[in-house]
Length: 441
Image (cartoon, rainbow, N blue to C red):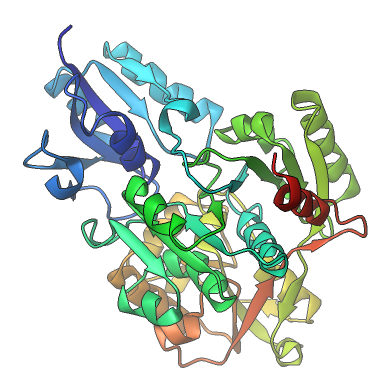
């Protein structure tokens, strides 16, 4: 058989992992390029030879997804592998149609080909949409495991937005580690709450190496998935988080629906702020597609520092970036907290947006009086700071899990919003974790 020429479509995460697992040392394939989307400034880079392996002494170019059609034709591509998440089923099939029209196979790699095995028990926490609350569920489970006398180590879905060589393997045991690696806001949003809770976090690009290192200091590995992606590790217990604020999305987004069908435990989160009808609709969809899943209900209460300072004031709300952008939400925990605290008015940051933030508002017109905490590069973080400082307001409400006051050295008065997971009185998730630790699966 002739060598198959491939393009892997991605967003600096699943794409690299799929390559490492199936193509890096496989002479039957030649990956001519990665394409990149969702994340600003990742196109135009190189997947370096140190990571690509001996079959790719010059590395592999990473091109913007807008060039996909030209790349297929230029390199006479045989297969296009789709390898990113949190997109609608319709979006996936539009990409498939383009590839098929140009003569290339369109490929979705299944989890059996891309999951790593571990010598430690693995609990995975994934979701059906980004922003569903899986990171809070991960923290909740990590605390439970520590209370049960276990040493959990979290493996976080990759976010290699800066230097890929330096990001091959990352270990965060303290905030000093995070500051030393010059983490982006997107990385800090995931690492900081776990590290502050005393949980060691691993991340990076080469998960075969990451798993081996994490196993050395863990009794149990806890996979914290990104977006609504499938797990990179083979789980012994598979937990999937659902968001009733977007009821129905569990059936219409890729690969969230696959997570629904695979789930051992389905966590319907945010039941404290969603309507009863929405919660019931999500529960019914779960029962239809995965009748054996154990269904758990959790709340995600928000906590606000110095709530009294918002009463009657004009506030600028800075929310978690991915939840607002490709997650499709028009508000998040910051807006809820500010309303509850009696804020009089929400400032509109759009007229004051700087640089790439202007492009973000153009690409996501559903955003009006909230500012997504876009911070995928040093330049973008500076633009975020400039936008915050330029927007007229009395107080900045920071609802991203990262401490922007420290990271951006903000001059304006600011308060932070935090949120954690709380179970209903039955505590089904707590009992399931206790059973898993005591008996396994």
